[in-house]
Amino acid sequence: MKHHDQNNLLKIYESLPDDGRIRIETIKILYGNISTSTVWRMVKSNKIPAPRKMGGRTTTWRVGDLREALNCVGGES
Image: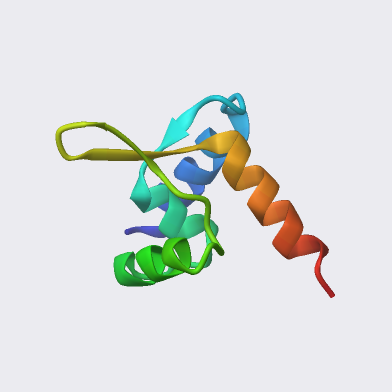
């Protein structure tokens, strides 16, 4: 993904309400441009909150859950 696209995704993420939903591409950027496989490993090890199925093949994460998880990671020393 191009750098300006990543910046746009992050700006959108910052403006979303806590009950907003985002998809895996944004998760990958939020956690430092990690791979899809790494996202799923981190979900399995409870380092990233579990997503919710929105039907069919659509999986999303709740923005508030991710903000809380990222704040916990950022607060660790």
